[in-house]
Image (cartoon, rainbow, N blue to C red; front, side, top):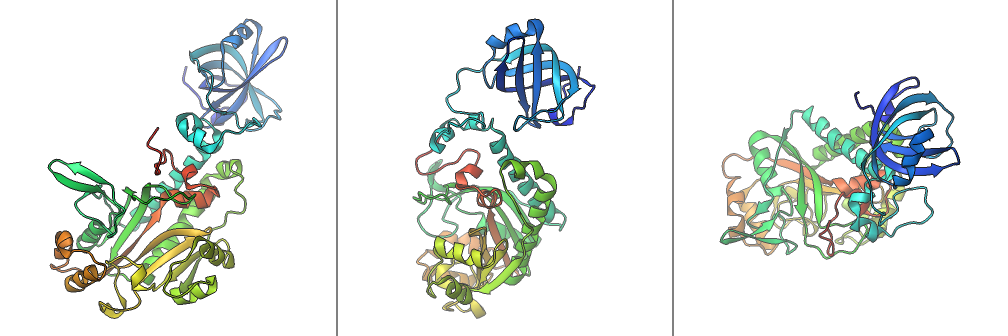
Length: 424
């Protein structure tokens, strides 16, 4: 007998279901199990001799149930309302021990977030947590689909590098045979090399930042969704970012109606891009020219343009990495061809036009107090016919946090890594 899934079955069928026991209710002559699989939850009615097996069950035990699907009018939360299973066979595949965290989302007792992360593998049993990562899967697949359809080449950049991608000291060092190496801060240098050869590339890749943050917006291992395009400037790649976010949100609205409902995400709208120069934006946010936006200023700017993506472009060169092109291609230009994108009250992306001129790149490295010798292969890659090119990066977890309206980016990370956490 072939296994069916809860979402797909109809009244009148004889079915074989496999899943987890979400809830057990015992009455005098019958018992009820709420069974859960990846597609949903259904009420199962246990009668006769089969009720003798109920004392053997525990919450989250894995079971196999055979039975007939009957029409019903169920009032319980989280479950199918229109049908139930009249059980003819109940087999326990794997009995669960006493649960260390609450998995039943109807329970009034709430588990502290840190404790939930200690048992993240069990936290995934919750429908709401599954909903987050179903939406994240649609984000990733939609991102790939959008750029695949535009003939971009998918790239797999190296994750072990010999020098900082973006300068600074926020690197994790690793021993690479007899040499010292680092976990990649960014695929930046490599995606530029590819764009200068193959014109258009995209990727979803992990990066690591050894920043000592304790915030709801930062983690130390991140998944980035990046692109890099030859023959483009900052304005053109900002438009690519606007269009892919629109595409992603449209796909989520089409494919994730139940997940959005589970997470109580209401009024998710397809955004449009709002384009402001850095100087205009920092004034609107109440900041000072030459300074970065604070989290409060980012929220203020987004509140001025609710449900939209706010692009702030032509940032000061002092606030952007060494590889961002300066205005008029001058080494000491005050402003750059770099931008940030804000959505849902926080930064989700940064990018801009890159420097494709080797001598200018050397000068910018020196200005940023970096040693050009450490970037020799990167600099040399632009000596053999490098076109102007631009790109950006979106944080996958942060975009998930925004769309799902989560309080903490770690909720949008399957197995988060922060300053304290290395397990599970």
